[in-house]
Image (cartoon, rainbow, N blue to C red; front, side, top):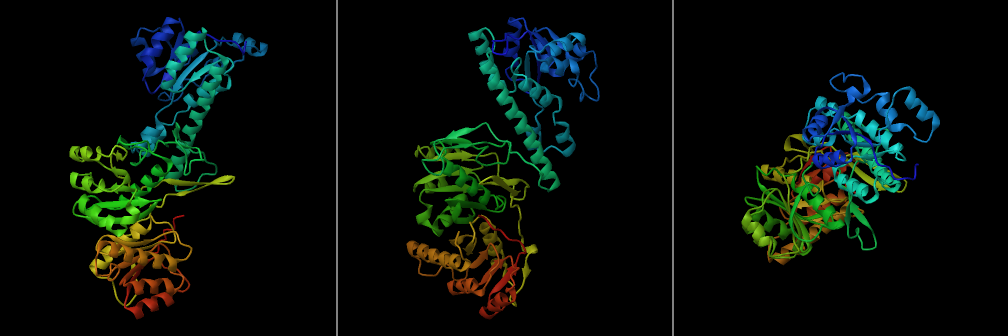
Length: 528
């Protein structure tokens, strides 16, 4: 019997998402399937003309505790879990008047959507489904005799299978069971992640809730396979963006676009327009301006060579002037919280350029978790949501920064948070002029950043040094004074760094001797 096709005679249906229920309900009615249901699902099916038996009538037990207890009953789980080819199970079903349930159609309380919508703690907890996962797992375990459907997207496949085979084959039931376990696993992972975010503690065990998979052409390189698995987190960014035009996003596009949008979100759009240009997950230019167009021109000037083929992120909607400037060079992706119709028309002339529009900016201070795969395990940590303002820093030198220097220092430190370590960022007048990323020594990053600033100055035809009068940010402390002196040689006048080195006094003394202003943040921003 287990290998045969089964044509369900009794179904249990309880769904939060009513999509497709009308079609499925009419189909089951045409097959004379007896339907057990609860609450809103029962009413919806009754409205379709389907004969429905309330679960409470079937079990003889009323719903109680505001509906928390209704399907947790032997007549439900016995009907799902009973082995039809085991004499002891068949006899137990007869003895206790348990009718077999051959089809279980359930989708769960919308916990993920509830949390993403910003629900309070009590509402989130109330949307943790208990009976649903229990019935899904029971049906999936007993898939030799029971079919389980957890996604409205599978209704059509179920109906097609039934029509083609006169019922549901073992192979099909097994596929449904695998999807069912994947769904409950993802659901539990989402709840685990939420509790971790609420408590600020890492759970003892953890699973990632993500999917369904969106296959990609390949990974970082053509010989690697890849897919994107949306987590369901509604944080504005690549996962939630609408792609207005352009080719499909690649693995590298997704990675770099995420990095760009997270960086540009550090700058409040109510204060100024901001643009971040990313290449290989590192910023090659970041600037603010009165308009997006002005911010873009200032950002691209930092490193026009690297900007070619880059990812452009905006903190304000894309307008026509900025669209004209951005499309004047080869660009892979533009991501913004909106765009004017004129700007969209301008970008449309570059058919391969991807334009992504989101429903807002991600909150840089929001909690969350970040993951990195290792051989034999996964590293997990809280998202780096640390932010520094002028009120948070400590002046450690004889000279305090000027108002303009302080504004640039905060700007530079926010950019440095998004640069691969060791990170050094030179900033002047609200724009990066040199970025040193991913070097094995901090002094090398300082020198590379100054060298890139000099190259950009020459490309712009400017006779004055761009790093002269700039400020410099370091993502971690200077272990020696040599990195600091490299910045002095470049012409920097103020420094922001976490502090905390055993040689802080030596570094502070070198800064005082050079006439620098230096502030400590007490917060490090390593990024690997």
